[in-house]
Length: 270
Ligand SMILES: CC(C)=CCC/C(C)=C/CC/C(C)=C/CC/C(C)=C/COP(=O)(O)O
Image (tube, rainbow, N blue to C red; front, side, top):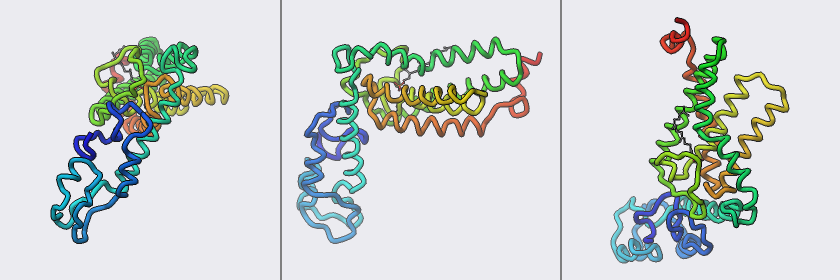
């Protein structure tokens, strides 16, 4: 692929489909070849683009106006290096990506964890609880959990649709109920949901310490299992955790109560 041209921001050069993680991708080579530069304010030097592929070749010898980028910035090179390391590391951690993988026998257990963090059981369970709940306080919490889960689905779909990072190539697309954007991997919807639900539960349920620890462990293990199953790269999950953590702030800010959303609660008060 031509460096810098039509290249996916989360896909280092030499990693077709964003998921190869193959050693010897071109990042390191390009980085070593000419270093990196910021915006050029100095008089242009011909041939600075050399080694950056077709674009560089086309510009060789050209006169660059002040302010034009001479090559990939240090930030871009650092980002690509991070992403290349992410692909390699994630591939190594994908030990349950298939039945024949190193830890393939643990795959069924990890797939069970996958279901435990999936949107469908959480939505179904919350709706069921809402239907059964007889206490106003319980209904308020469950209604907000429903709002949180729906918000999570929408925000993850928006970010996945914008970023469009492909899932790792070693992922087997045998996931439990998916929607169209789930062909993309950034961020991990399981990680956002796990982090958000974890914060939600810790804030709104009175639980003994061991149970609180269990909830946190569940969230962490769901995240790790995404990489082990080969569904995600590490950065998808890390960002998912951060995003899910912050989503809870949104839920808290827009907390639905009989005062803030009387129409919603009127359904039960009739
Ligand atoms: C259960 C009820 C009452 C309604 C379901 C409504 C519905 C179909 C919601 C969509 C749920 C869904 C398919 C969520 C996607 C979950 C998923 C596969 C996320 C991807 O996670 P990732 O970690 O692989 O990014």
